[in-house]
Each structure stands twice: as C-alpha cells, then as structure tokens.
Length: 216
Image 1: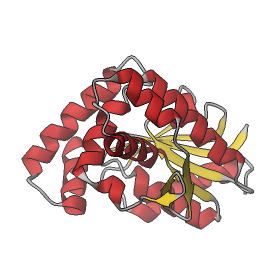
Image 2: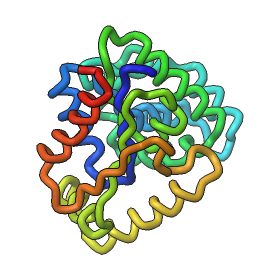
Image 3: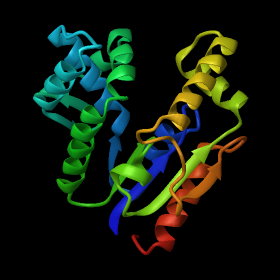
C-alpha cells in the first residue's frame, strides 16, 4: 500500500479544507487533483482549440507538463494558480474532464507527482480511492447533507443559495452516473458524514485512521 490518504467526496463535503488540514497536521504533501483539470482546461482555452474537437483537446493536454508545488498549480513551468479559477478555465475543465484521453494523461501526471514526494501524501478529488490511488493506505469518502453543502459553497464563493443547491444537485448526478470514473466510495473506504461537524473533528477522525494504519 502507498503512504497516501485518499479523500473523495462531492462538492461542499469539506474535502478540500479537510485534506489540506490533514496534510498540515501530518507534515505530508497535499494534492488537489481538481486543479489539474482546471489547468488542462486553461491550456485548451489558451490554445484556441474548440472543445468539441476532441482529438485536438487530448493532443493539447498531452503536450503539457502539470505539477503542484507548495500548494500552487504549475502548467509548463508557469504558476497558473490564480488563472485556473477563471470562468473560462472552469467551463473548459468541465468538458475536458469527461474525456478518457484527458483523464488518462492527468491520472499519469498525478501519480508521477506522488512518486516525487519524499514522504506521505494526502490527495483529494472524486476518484482518488477508486482510480488514481486504488492502493492508498487510507481511503475516506466525505459527504454531508445537500443543504449544508450548498450553504458551505455559498459562504465560500458567494451567490444565490437556491441556484447553488440546484447546480450542485446537477453536478452530483453527472458525477455519480458518468461511465468514466464515477463519483462513488471505494469498497474499502471509510464514509464520514461531515454534517454539523467542525473541521477539527473531521481532521481528528482522518488522522486517527492514518494512525490506525500504522503510518504515523
């Protein structure tokens, strides 16, 4: 088994906040796989490639170098951490993330990232425990009540609560029913419902699982 903590879950479940806090608590590296897809979307947007030209999209992504260092996302040696949060990059990411060729390139890049780490790693996403690191030592699937998830996202980014809740419901359906890397807990994942829980409480439970696995 790899010294990897795989944290999966839908939007608003707390996986980003929790995974970063767990990594900090353990002194391990942190991997945000969603940033890879945003960087891929940015690369496609910059290349001026039409998103429906699937072959060209895969070719562009396959020609890029992706990396994360010190919590920053790098595309071909350029720090694009701020730029990948643009609406254009987000829209492109939502399309390119559905393409098998793109996912294959980025999963390889994420595994290469992990192989470069000198210690353990905490990785977050939607298919970490099932696809990216199926041999992770600890797998956690976070969830929460849909209303609370929407409130968290609204507090984080602003916007109309009802619109956010509707968008998240649609994203959940898309993620959980897609043929390629559907959002689901790994068979050996620990399910944690974060509804009404503080961040420290959830982090304590995850770190406890890491300790029980003999990694610390």
